[in-house]
Every structure is written in C-alpha cells, then in structure tokens.
Image (cartoon, rainbow, N blue to C red; front, side, top):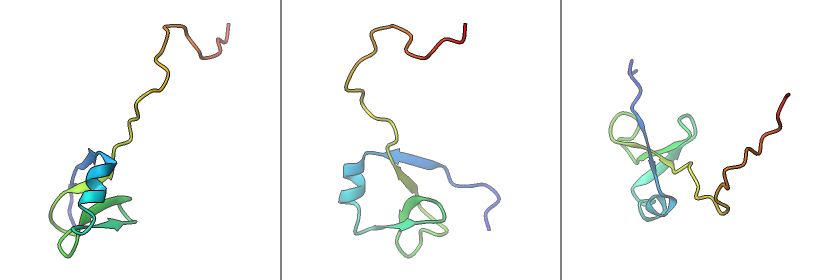
Length: 67
C-alpha cells in the first residue's frame, strides 16, 4: 500500500462524462480512477466541487452577527 496518497484532481463534470469508458468510480476513494490499473497507477479524478454563483455578492455580510 502507498504511504503517500495520490493527489485528487478536480475536473469539470463534462470531462468525467466524456472519459467514462476509461474510468471507473472507486467508492473507497469517492473518486474516479483508470479502469484495470487505477488502483495503483494513474490520476484520481473528482468532480469539480466549486460552483458558479448565480447571485454575486453585494458586499453585505449575510451571516448573523453574535453582537
């Protein structure tokens, strides 16, 4: 087993759809890896977690203040 984890790379969802024939989902990693050799070699891909905001911030603090 590896002492150092392979870094996760975040890619857009459409790339994961296009690469689906080459990738499989690893539930242990909660990521996509290459079929056949992915348990030891190759990239570890995850869907991009950042989203585009539909409403840009207007600069006002929206969190409740404790004071």
